[in-house]
Length: 113
Length: 113
Image (cartoon, rainbow over all chains, first blue to last red; front, side, top):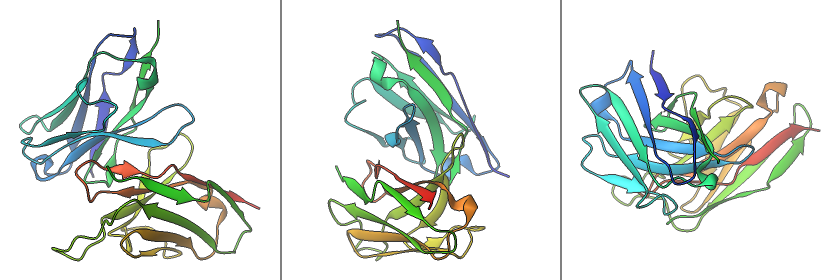
């Protein structure tokens, strides 16, 4: 059974940083592109960032470009999202997803003073 | 970037009746190299992560009831629930994965009339 588990969320002040992690098991991690998707409270889904199978290509939504960095460690079967210069509008539940079909339960990021 | 627009924003349908949700992409999501349409449909219930229903615009994910079907052309797509059941109450999203920068529609809230 495939399991995807996000962690690293929390409360951070505007301008601060957080690093999210996503541990995947039950699949050949290195064979799948991965993405981060977020959902602000009561709002719709927003695709945030994606990374190719070997980590050589990364992609970002315009609203996080230059502030967020996606990476992966295929030896640890783990996906990361380094989030810098956080803003109040980045407050959301952040999901990790694999090949569009495997999703975690999400980790909540709250940006507030 | 590709913009996805769903209609309607909300929909109320009687039990046993047909529900139809539309999704339009700002540019074609049909690949000329493999003739596949890079369009997926997700169902999200409160407090849960999204669940993949349909991929390649018309292929039902394993375990998804056959009352769910997807269709469409290069830019216009439809999710149809042939006979609405109570457990189908949810928000439905389309997503394009043609571009390296994925994007979602704004969501359609489906309720029972």
